[in-house]
Amino acid sequence: MTPEAVVLAKVGGGYRVFADGITRTAALRGRLKHTSEDQVLVGDRVTVDVSPDGSATIERIHSSWLARCEPPTGRRN
Image (cartoon, rainbow, N blue to C red):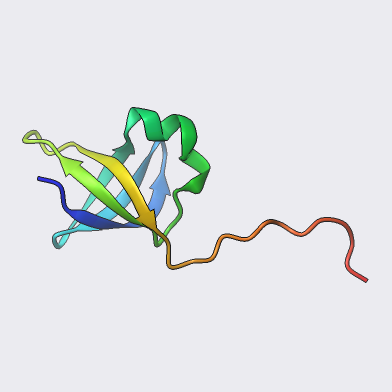
């Protein structure tokens, strides 16, 4: 089963996601872990693979409702 989910929070080494009316903890897929750890934010839409044993893995990051901006540099006058 591979539902679309919304990221609710970062918890420990995983993410709390909401899909199909269920809240569960999901880990990042291996290749995403090495490239996207800082890019998964609360509110992101993701594809989650749920195994028969109930464990969940974030397979793909779709988009975010939040804008990602570069932090300001220097002092503001």
